[in-house]
Image 1 (spheres, rainbow, N blue to C red):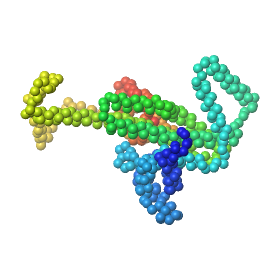
Image 2: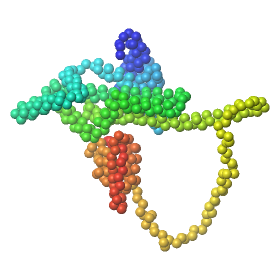
Image 3: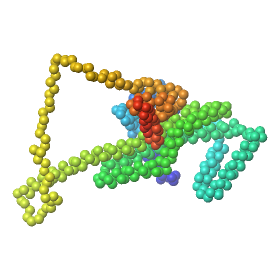
Image 4: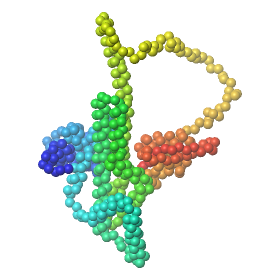
Length: 479
């Protein structure tokens, strides 16, 4: 983007981030939104809860700076911050709820991130960033090299370096990273982790903007349904095949790997335990940053799913409009026939596609059959139960939902996450498909992650010793 005078003048008027920096209440807005959203890593807050938090904030500020400083109510401030001409909060209705919720916009998060960068740091590391630049350039060159000989030469070079390092270790020359290098790298890790979490709101905002454009196009569309469907579907393909879509999908696949999550947890725990790192007083939330990534990316996945919902709603609305159009055509034909009834046009004036209409006579319909009124006798007659097998009544089974939830909780006490496949490995399925469906209901109520990209096989033994198996999306329970 060109940072010329015209561009910056326009940006100052239209960009929510600039408007927030220029707002008279910017200290209140930024500090409040940072405290309730960023520091707590919260995505959505209901209107009632957010009003209560802001009232508490205003009460404290009025005690210090006087009543006239903030004369309006918390609800008024929130409504203003969510208006289109401000754009600092996003007001929406969560699925299945009549109460609105609020979330900060990506513009607000950019402002908070930029303000955080203004604070002076005791230690500014540069080596780790330089190493990262070298590493990225090396990956790009190696990843695009198609000459097998050059690839082999490069791998052999790495092999010699590794062999030399192994020899040095065997000879007792074990090099250890200095404390300065450790502090430099942990700062780079923390900064990158926060930036990544911050970028999710922008990615989600981009997808939501596309969803809004599709809905506007559906509302104004006056052409053929097939053309619009083709355009919408191509738009969805464009999302998944774009650089942003591919990068997000690769990140999601990487993050959904339980082995990768366990590896991340182990490395973060080990690194944050170094004395040199403890001196920096790193935010303890960094230890669980990958679970924050998982929650944030899950929000983005739900936004993409809304596109499918909009498509289904379009089909329903369009079918209604087509039926209405047929009725309008019939009414126009009837009105025109009445107009020319007394003044018939001469000669050939009309062409009919069919010589006769298809007529369905009323008498061809089946006659009405009155419903049979059951006669209920007051006397109870003792039935002959000599040939009745009552064992069927006692062969019913009940799936104990509390027991299944307890099994999942027991495994979560040992692990941060556990998949349904792992649960059934430890606690085999005993009640067949009904038990599996109960696990689905538990997963839905607990907000477990359904990974549609990966399938897992779950099997069990029936009463007749036959083995049954199903392939289901990967379901991951979290603490």
